[in-house]
Length: 184
Image (cartoon, rainbow, N blue to C red; front, side, top):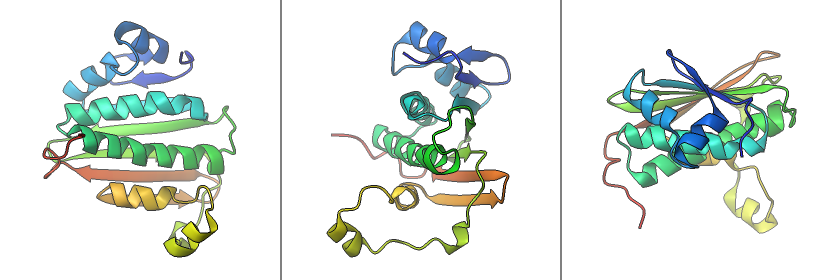
């Protein structure tokens, strides 16, 4: 299902993705449960391929739920993380699976922070403009709303981009009032 080149690690032991999913089934990675209860930091490094997005989503959802986020909030966080990962895969790494995509997840009693790092050329995030949604919808243009989604789904979104040294995207979601959200 998932290649053995994807690693989830904490301070104690690295786990291969195939082992995680073999042990507990597709959407219940035990490493995520273990990490959420101990170190509260998880780092996931995968090849830059959209094939790994399912694994990243599953880990993010499980850690968010273990941190206290309701199901809907956990899925919103995972969607924002997925958008950041897709941007890194498509734009920074140009679908080059040889370049690693790094996702670090940190939780505490107030928030969940996800940092997505790539090895691309970097970009000028300060001059990004919000798209005109009426024009966007009229043209029915696919794609291009990843950053808008991230900003709407998360409480904070920050970018750090250095020319030739890649980009880091910080996605922050606070736990306050999230327990009441649920999927119906």
